[in-house]
Length: 340
Image (spheres, helix red, strand yellow):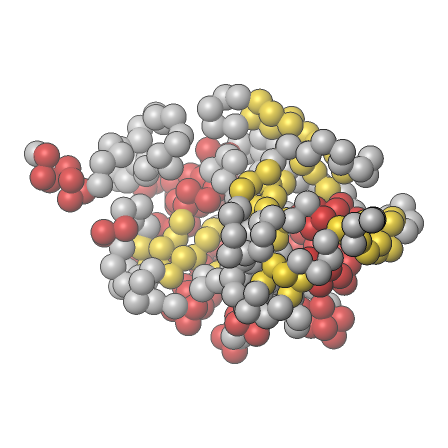
């Protein structure tokens, strides 16, 4: 007997594609009863802005074969049997190893990824044609225990001002959880380490202005009830959920671009797979013109050099990275004091 399946017709730059969705009734979000077919239809509805935000970039797929409460894994290179409209690009990881990574260029590619049980899409900050040089500066504002989305909002607004002083135009989206992601388009002329230094410079300036509400402390024991500016998300092969990507949380939220003017009145819990298509149809995509006027990180790098001259140098890298020049010890402060 033939297995249950649905075929969706997905529009795109090369006309209609027919994408087969097997096991369409598989429930991915049990609390909401949202199925694999529901998710595929969501990607059809938001296809154009989704591809504008996440297409033409190395992409990692966070896949949940049994739904969000089951096992998950990350997939980077295109699986066997990928359709001809899905491609790959060679990237270099922090270890120095090279490997092909998935790239999508049209909505059918995103819908096909749902067929592969993808729930969350994680794009690189660089494009497929120049993978070593990001064209987006990205800053993750991560509320720590004791803080929430409402604490991230004033931090994001002040960060927007900081970036404007550095000559950059900032864009904002919900993380899909409790935080906010602030992006700025940049010319792809600097490699990842330099962009990371620019992010650290901006983060330190934000911390100076909001010391009781924002922290750049890598070690959790030092963060307190503040919003952490996660500078390590700017590293090579470090990604966050893309714009319009669903998240694997019970109420099926979406990482949703916003206008700055609506940020203070936004409840991120209302931005879900069920509501975002209607929002897009009614108000359009706040990120539609993001890359019309990219800036540079030259001023941020001047801030980095100023801070380095004052004794504020490199910060810790993620534990799976090789030891980096100038990096402080990777021992949490309480353990260092105990060992000392």
